[in-house]
Image (cartoon, rainbow, N blue to C red; front, side, top):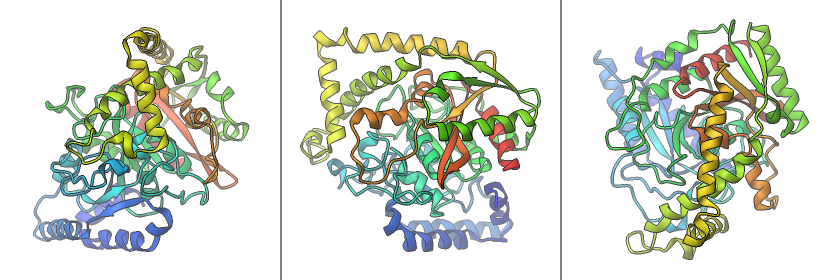
Length: 456
């Protein structure tokens, strides 16, 4: 069932909000020990919310766009009265004292927040293996990583523990686990969704976005969480389109689809075969495929990580043990410490010009070239992740782990919207198709996803 259809059934009281909530709670009780998607749930507040929604519906009173739909929130986004740990021992006792802007908007539209999802510690990872509370399992390919850093949010949706979830995407942290778990994960245009209340990994890249099983869920959530926020400095002042209208645009006729040679050259052959099949489907639906070349692809990953290290180091200076109880360097995991140390090193005056400032110049170049690349097409498509998720417990070199982000960081460097939508599988392991568009042309991506979804 499409999520928009389910929303209508709840508003018509053919399904009650309480029934919907109870079904997900039953799934959490049955499966969360296996998948470790949720770190904390609060059924008392969720039941109170659902009961209130049902009462208003029964009285014929108006309810919000998300009425009765159950939502999971990544554990680095503030929700009042929940533990906001960023999956780190550093913050294991920190309880949120306020709601992030996206949370306020979800509650205002009667979404039911059930709990906080697992993630890589401080979002510094691509596998959800670095969580202090234990890694998450992939329900679509059990025994393999679910991806990260928003792995718990992806798993929660994939394992039918909630209707929708929120993650944060710094360099692929929504799209990567969506690809591995066989669902949709969406990174909006930078500044389209308020970051107020999000714990930074790298503030100039971070963007909050949704997970869902179908495009209508993505569209619905984007209508709720998008829009200007005067309290957040990166927020764009623009008119939010009706994204749900885009899911009815089922024709790709006349669309120009850009296929970047290097995206395919960098990817496993088995993945390439599946993505080429998706491109063929788009051709059959009337799209024109345009071959593109991006000569700066090898520059993207080092540029991204150099900036990431410095911004992460700066963001973590507040976790010094005075307010939050524990100094981050004393208790954090290996990957978080690596990024702190690298950021501290690069930030030193004698090295800043050699590394950080050059990375900023490289970012400007990449952004300019990406905008030129995409200027003459409607969207660019290719693999989301260049390799299949590894088996749990596999020891990877840090550079091998970073390679999961090789095809996703470009969108963050350029600030453009991007999604991962299911394209097929390799012997049962899901593969995602990445679709990228010009800034603020998010609705175009949703329309293409919906068209593909309708033929699959």
